[in-house]
Length: 239
Image (cartoon, rainbow, N blue to C red; front, side, top):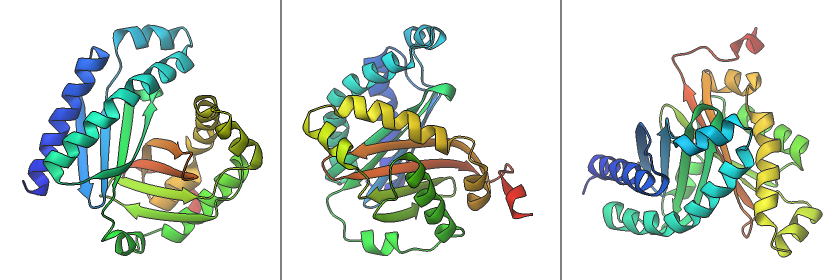
């Protein structure tokens, strides 16, 4: 199966598995494969029960429930990717933009033959993006030890950070408090990412969505940006 067919097949499958497990599927699912990476952008995904919970300001309940369901779905999604795209998935990240009913998955395959080439590919604003990510990390916890970024397609950027956790966070991980730590870090970092005019200036477009997730064992995090290059962003910073 070629890449285009695999992307289409995965889009249909992910829409179906979300509908079967959440009671309602997303309006659309966009899959982009750029080995060893796969990104999945999900739009208009919110069940009636979740809508009620968000109205009652129960965002944490929705996040926790989705985390529980995703723990069971991720192995199934990995297995399907292996069949359709011939990629053995080693790392899987996800996050939700509950405020606008969106979500994104990001998978990294174990075969990293092309990863060094991709990580060193240049794109407009790359150095400035790394500096802003360092600044955000410093505000949230600490400056990451390493930052890499990839332009996956015209609308999607991925930033991989390594060496993030401070002593108290590592202790919480050892104590098995990953869920509490993730909920807290999501809230802090997404507050810094959302409506960040400097990031929009750097990426030269309106950031429709930003997502963040962590791999606590690897001390690694992924930030994903969905950018609309046809809409003005924060370019007034360039003036």
